[in-house]
Length: 323
Image (cartoon, rainbow, N blue to C red; front, side, top):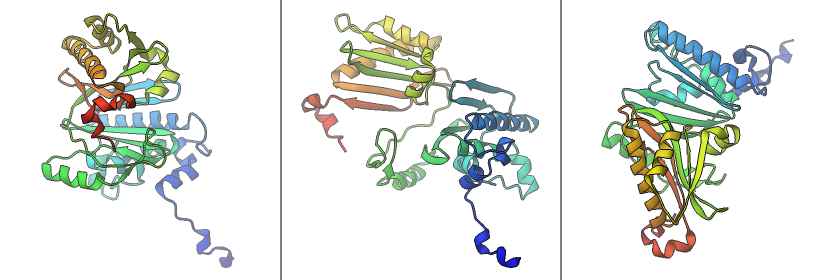
């Protein structure tokens, strides 16, 4: 009988394979993880379980859950995963140091297998940790890391991280599967985020006008939001004869559920973006996310721009940035 049990009988699995091949361990029933509700079930159950653990440890007293047809968004107001270990805690099995009872007491609710399982079983997965006024975001597709922000606390750390990124190939939906070489790095101050929003200016081909697109669903794929929850996306065009006015800014502000000083900031932002769009011959200007800080201010956190190639002859500064 021993001859039937050889080294070939033993298979070593990666974290991703372990979850995908043995989903019954993590989704509460036998299966292969292909069921549409598997990831949603794990995310809700495990995240809420973790949140309860956090509450028992004195770390969290509020949970926000938002459901759409194809996605679930959960915010847990607990202690948050340490930023430097965010990737590990949502993708690598047994990062919780549970071999140490003291460490386990500190880590309970933050390092369980639940988030790793929903990551492995979901088409797309995005995790964000907020600690001490700093934040980090990681994004996965089918359990594989696609992108991550890097948080540093000194000039030296920023230089070290930049060196790691320069020259590497970045693969996104816009770059295609071949990706693009990273030749420039954008460094910004850390922001304490209260809300993430979406704002864009585009050329509407049907009307030949500039169109504004905005949504309360910032930090997400706007095409998916528009397809699944179109009521959460506002689109309108600007009449070139009358141009931009304060009314347009207020319309965006109300759609984004802004209040107080944020409305005034939004009106000013919309006016500036419109002028920039026209003066620089843009085809697309996308801000994702546009955020509301915990101080209640509006801030453009990340942006992407496209330009009319036929007008580049008069945009020398833009042409100089071509890859």
